[in-house]
Length: 295
Image 1: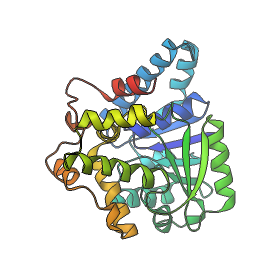
Image 2: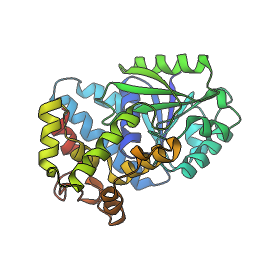
Image 3: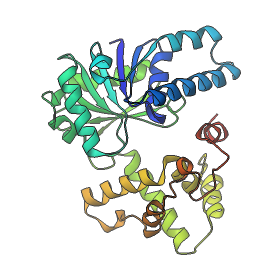
């Protein structure tokens, strides 16, 4: 399986494309926006330069990686040769359903369809296709080229064969795949998001300030960044969306989103992407945050 299609060229999509291309896969990066594709390639370029400066790859490695990536604005064209198609768009159920319907229509019969979703049901995604046994979750962590974990999520009908293949593909990227079943939030976000939400509740109740809460988690629990900084990095709208999936899917009030989180999203304070969240990010970029926290 050497031909990979990645649908969505945002932060996760370009990171997934970068990683597969760096390990020798031929990658079709698909997005409806030509500008988004140009930005994605520029981001991959900068990230490769950063890895070169750290002495981990050569200029030739960078050239080979970029040569392995082709860009498309048409899903039909982009996925026609794909052995594995990975959807990496925003956490919007309807958008993902529409994309999976298109993938089912345009991909080869034996193509595996994967989603990078962090919370949406793989079983539901499989149900909009005629190949639910070939639908699976590949939840990469951000930043994709650096973080080792990939959650491999089995839908209700995902086959053993497909699961084994996808686990092996993740290993070929020097990742550590962990198999989990399809329940709201899977494992990563079922544990992480309530922690972030509790940090926001603690802030709202005046127990401590933003920097104080983050300092406790960084110095006391050895986290690379505190939960409120991480929420800004993820996007407060994404955090709210995942909390709503947990709350609606599990029906337990302990997963109810903090009113402060709801208000901040309503006001457009989304974190890094809007320039302001729990911190001000007006003069900083995601790349700088990643460099400070992970590299």
